[in-house]
Length: 246
Figure 1: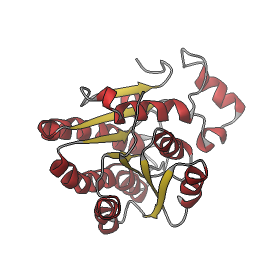
Figure 2: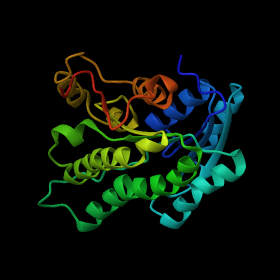
Figure 3: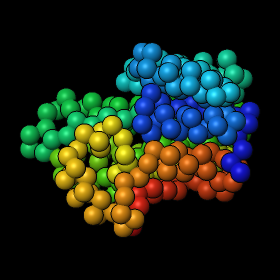
């Protein structure tokens, strides 16, 4: 199930957390993974995949560097011959109440979380259109659907991903390319571990399944959408939130 042998996958923000789990899960299913992050941050991920017998390459890129990001899909195709799966995962937060939010924090979050996805997907679509196949998966957030005080910039960027993904799903469906969104809820990562035990408990009370999600929960959903089993699913928002938002 979810066999991806021979597929070439590109994952942004792959150095840790959800991105790393996605890269490792795709590789575990047989995909050749190009893991990207700033500088050399993706190298330990690629090394770990290779050590387990998988195929991976690390590539350093800052997703806010549009010129470098535009070249990335071309690099993948030049080296590996094709590009089958793109997972746009890189993202940041700069939380603040909107009345106190600095314009630069708004701009940086939108540039990293939304505009970079546009840049990457636009470039990746070219080889996919020629292949007449491909899987594009964007990582949004439950915050895009329900909002959260102090995260207007983050919520706007992640909600934008949903609209963007649905629009391009209609544009490329006739070429055999699917475009889907995964919206994680509260996931156990470095970011959430920084919350106090009380804060984590308060959040957990809002989750019907009674626990935080794991990075593997999200990676499994991405792996499904990247597989042949999801060939008839496009323009879909797959919630991985334990029932936090229904």
